[in-house]
Image 1 (cartoon, rainbow, N blue to C red):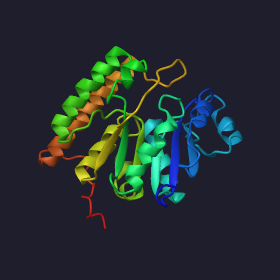
Image 2 (image 1 turned 180 degrees about the vertical axis):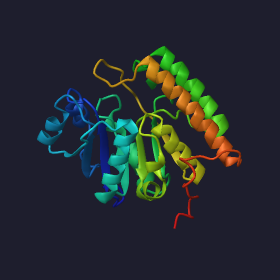
Image 3 (image 1 turned 90 degrees about the vertical axis):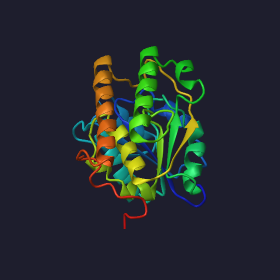
Length: 254
């Protein structure tokens, strides 16, 4: 617990058997109260590995996609009584060693959402992020900040933490089941008026780390641009939006 707040770490998993234990070995023992792994129909022994490590495990009967996996993660964590939910990928790309820095600002009421940024500092390129991904990240983030009306160092990190209030009020089930889920959720959070903080996060790009292909990266990038344009259009009253239409303003959710 942190400040008497229950912390649940969620791990959206797909074929993470070779990296799961390495990820957990870096987990600080005094911060996280419970761990939840949601397996998205892996083809390796991720589930048996998780169960042998004593992790609460939910198994999808079919692959729901990265966004669909996160939806199960957050719904289940709330059912478990989480006050703070932190998402860590079990592919060992992001280190759990900085979970305290991710969780404490939320548990102490400073921020509603925390992001582990690979771009702050020199973590991205030092950790092996391909140059084309780095350039794409910077270009997309600049464009998103311009359209969404916020200022983040990156919108594309998979290391995130949320307060219970935020997860209860943000309609994340309205979002895509694909990778653009992350950006849609951030746009929902920003539109609603919740506060987002960032901490520097080192990252590792290794052979056993999960990654999407160049073709899927292009598809993701186009989805991000559409998401940002849709957010601007909705905010100005020019467009309708399926993922923003049910978003309440902070303090008006009740």
